Image (cartoon, rainbow, N blue to C red; front, side):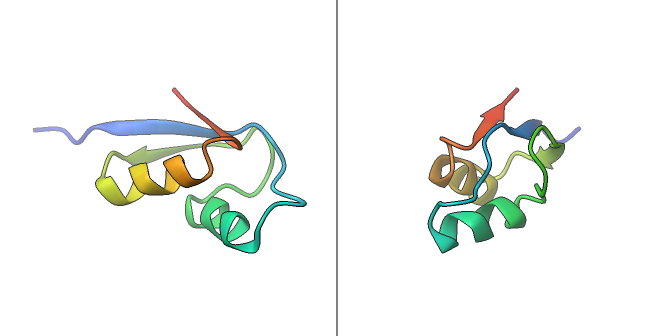
Length: 59
């Protein structure tokens, strides 16, 4: 059984946002705008994406 994956792209710079949101973006492995990561679909990752939903796009 293969694991479900999510493609997450940073579409807006985290400069000027709360420190916890910047840390969450780094926790997702995103450092540069337009960088894409493929992450495992877990409740923890979903929660991180929801927290910074205004900065990222999920494919």
